[in-house]
Length: 235
Image (cartoon, rainbow, N blue to C red; front, side):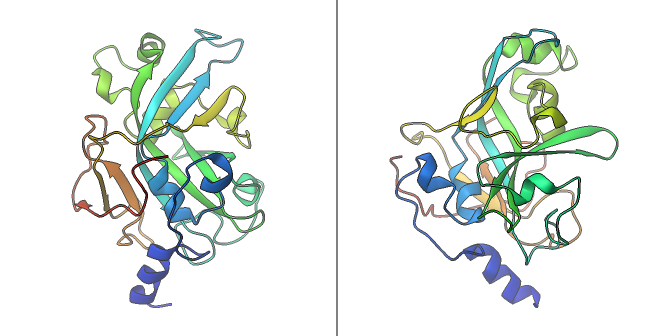
């Protein structure tokens, strides 16, 4: 597949284009990976700190303001591209589950699985805007970290919300870690798109989505542009 054709496929998503008119769970995760990545902007990630960890029982929550889509079958940057392994098995499970992996021997990354079981697509959640449990988030980050930056970047997000491999495979509809969908999209939200960050394969595909109105966007803003959203203004 040449780069031009790949970009067309990337924009549509493997399962074809879909105009999202209902962001409830049963509709959201039946959508193509790109539509899920876009629709998750403005949703909330809620984490209850598990027993045995500092601040156990605390509820940590942030608004999702940056995502990246990783497409099944056609995307060499997707962890499912070469098939199932012990490390990536969760990406081939049911959509709407957590896929968490350890990278660079340094930090965890939190993803939401997409596409039907066995296909292997995911959305990386790159940044959150802190909403609640901010004091507990701060205790997991350097003391001088600004509030807006507590969960900015995939590794910082996982540190701030106590996310590790124990979360891998979790059903994000309920439980200690879950995605909560807002009733309406914020009127100040401006979604822009651009290339994904920190990868070499398919690096130019415009699969990163950002709420430009948020101060919590990760520092790398280059080559982002505004686009017309496919979604309705109501959820």
